Length: 429
Image 1: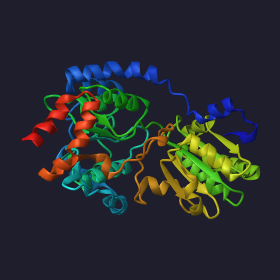
Image 2: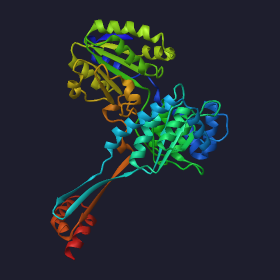
Image 3: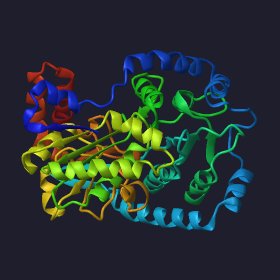
Image 4: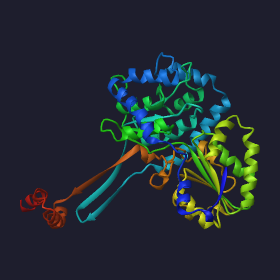
């Protein structure tokens, strides 16, 4: 990791560090657009063509069968089943409190306003299945969708070359009660969920992380009137760690590598008030990375990652809030007392015994989070992400009389006389 001193950076150099590893999104758009257009026009047949081209899909049924779900459960290690069940319990416990019951208020005597929530009827979940298969993402997306009350939950994830889906992923889906599962990944999966065809109906909103092509596809379908909404722009994973001189360097290094191993386009950042700690962490990184099965990916991620020496914690938090990390870990003494210093972050891990990994799997919070600085304006996936609110109003005769002059005056000020008449005709009659 490159090491910089925060006080030595000018504003331009600081801004460069706030950027993520360069992804030429326009180039990615140019690759993805023809795929989307082809699937939009030709449906499943086009999607299968790209599945064969990019994922070596061998053909056969694209939909996971009941027998395949049963086989996955039969083959899966009981310890993995138990872990999935416990993680699902914790995720459900945390998320069920997010379901809003709405509210009602009388704003003026006789004027009643209400806000109620309805589940999005049909949603699509994208679960990555490339270099790492993520049954945890299946739980993170399907559980809040179920709590929200979505009637139709569609899952897409690429199959292995033998045409099979990972057993743990299928078990996680089955355990939650999701059975519409297609062996499809990449931009073609996003396109099929967004546009649908005669066999597979389109969804209203797509959720889930993915590589730059999946992210580009999600962004493009979200601005196409024939497409659908998306949860958020979410690209490669990232973590920022703020550590003081009392931090355990082995813990800090482990946290950095836990994100670096996601892929070469991930980024990890260390902010510390102690140059000595940064040096110790750098040495620890060398020791730990050599033992990782995915060390090549982790090393590539570290090439575009860096450590910053801050003069004090206030400077560290200022940089962190500008960076707006997906994951923020506070390796600080009395970490909980610093919560108010956090303005922009996807999910925060407080103290040396709160590794980011627990949030990825089983603490209960959601790991589908905004990346690339989008934490400045987006939060992570919640139950409400799978719902939309509807407002209602109901006026009594006296209520309309009480508010009539206000509406008439404002409508006339805007020269919208039909708006005024809709009130005046009632009042006069």
